[in-house]
Length: 433
Image (cartoon, rainbow, N blue to C red; front, side, top):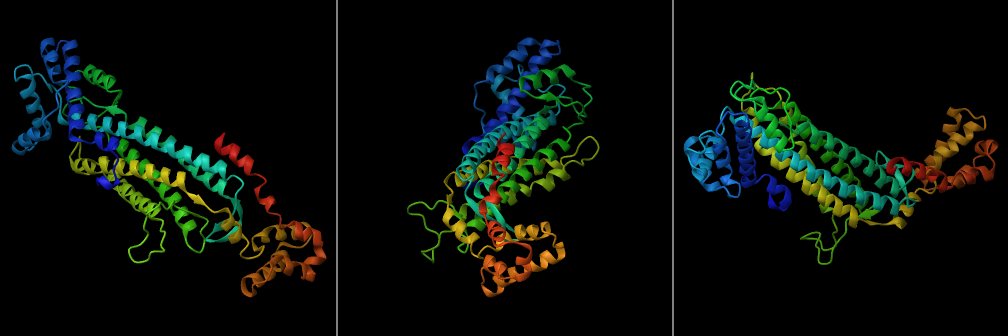
């Protein structure tokens, strides 16, 4: 988690102090539940809450762990130092470390998901605003990087909006799937702790009890969660790649905002590079890199092993912090993106009407010309544009075979750009409801 690519709110979720606070709440609520059913004395449960306003000494916990080689035991030892050894003797009764670790991890992931969902909603607002701003801004659509047919910049923003809207739904589902806790004991049988304790703790932490756990919460839940983060990161890269292509010198249909005093190159003073979207492409790779390890964490030995632990201690904070930063940065890019409608029209007209070839093809077939012959007639005129720098409409009007089937007026009518944008409103209604 480099500070360069981090935002404070998400970083705080993964701080040692936050983690120990959640551990403490799990243990304290568990004591309350055990006292309520008579497993431990009520006074001992109350004593644990002496630490409710204490800032845990991370250095002291680390010092204890250096001896115990066990993080949860180190924390419990420090807690006993705060509330008193006798008062704390029932803390963690019947519980296993994973009850604390897994439940805490899921609380952190839920809190991270809340931030990510808010991030996506901010991005959606930016995409929607730009989509309506450029709903009728015509630009050339491209397939294989080659001019295809006209579209609009608004539709480009709208399809990214629709994609991110799906990602918001995915994050909501992922959040729900990860919102479980387990206080079920050594192998998940509740042999030494009543299921009521789990229900009580989960209710306090706004989680659902895991229906069946072993010593750990099943890792298919986490695999699904991190897979969704991977999909969101791919969508970020999808948008970033389009912007990078639009900013290429030969295209220049849009570019990242270039602020006063900004420099693009240490060697070439003229450069204005798409550095933010290139950065987003790289960050997306980091988030996706966590997906395979998360999937591999599903298969653990018997009731558990800890092969998943080192993975999750890394990918939990790294992916959520990185994705949070990336979503925020992309929102800023979209908000400030400089769009050049004139360049879009200039690019579209670069091959002088060539992009209207399908309309001519269809018109010929509707006049009774076979599709094979229609394609041949249109393509031979199109190739003159590619190879001889001709004007497509002019060549069609000079082609006797074409003019046998179509009138001059019919040929000219096929070059109306408005034909390609007539259903933009319909698409917008579908996307923005």
